[in-house]
Image: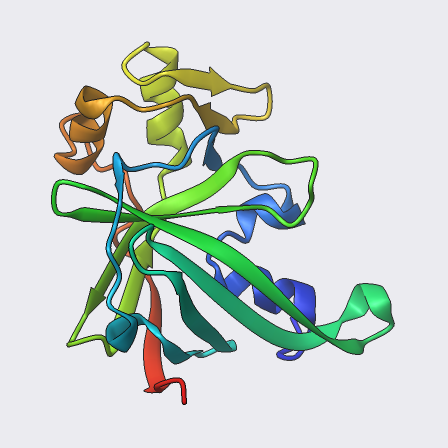
Length: 193
């Protein structure tokens, strides 16, 4: 994978290589995961964030509604390697002490939200993101413990999660539901001017 290749870089930094064209399975939701928007402190969230694959710029679009705007620039192989700039709206929602990120895929035909667990720490200097274990969520949906469906390829689409469903997820009552051993880690390089 080329370091400056736009599409793969954009996908990696958002942590969902699986859903954006590699053919791997994913867990999505028809509505944002988390029972309420998180109030965001722009001093913590806004800035240029580094990942070994590159960097992204994050701005708080609406602090009360928990809306971030994430921007990335890079070469897009689908446009002959031309430099392009894209932004993505990320909804940050909470359930108890947990934060969740939610965003929609690039294609307008996919109305579902890509999501995962989110944590910001070190006084706004590091963001950690973890992604759902597809096999575990598929099992919980098949058993009727979580609402949703599993398609023939094993992709999971969750329906609206009620408080008791979120508790199953946040308390991991049914096993390890996230890929804890492989977080996406971003470090803040600089605040926004």
